Length: 229
Image 1 (cartoon, rainbow, N blue to C red):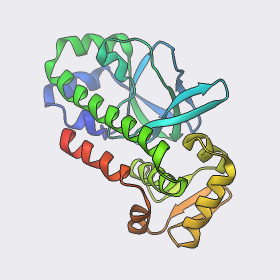
Image 2: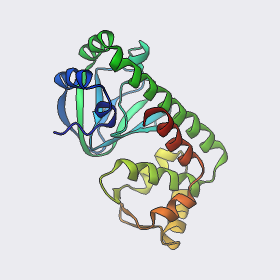
Image 3: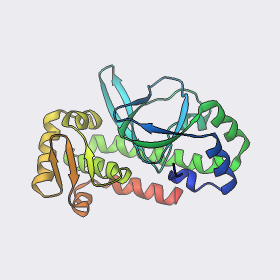
Image 4: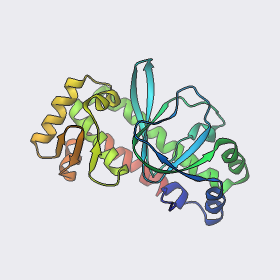
């Protein structure tokens, strides 16, 4: 498997080689739960193809997506802050490949390498900015803009213009009723921005979808560019 994770690619060569020596390639299955909220982090993931939703639990049956991790980042950031437990549920949203390293081995390498710690801590800031943006987006922006933002974020991390999603899943991720997703997706489809049928969604007009999204999408991209590129 190629080391196509952007965080790993940007490490100094020596640190990159040491980290990859600890990693094993794994496949992320759609719908797989990699970590439950409150559970001890057993592994760190560096996606190279798939992508992961970070879901804040509201009650035993309801959650809300507050972040997304793809090949630009990593799952397991609490370990960088000296914490063992995750505050979110990590749910595979897009099947694909990833590097995986056992938490104890990762912590040993982290303690030994300043060259590893510095860029990963910058990523923690970018992820925090994404979560802050998600909180404001939930409160102030209409469903249609939020859905467009979510689709753009997913497409950025997917390997193409097609996504496998259901109305139920989108409603769960955005914290809204299913009927709200039906109306918002229908409007994006009428405008020729997407095609959606039986859980298969295709992005037809990327520029139009960006125009339909709230400014939070651009803020997320800017935070990444300023701190990690």
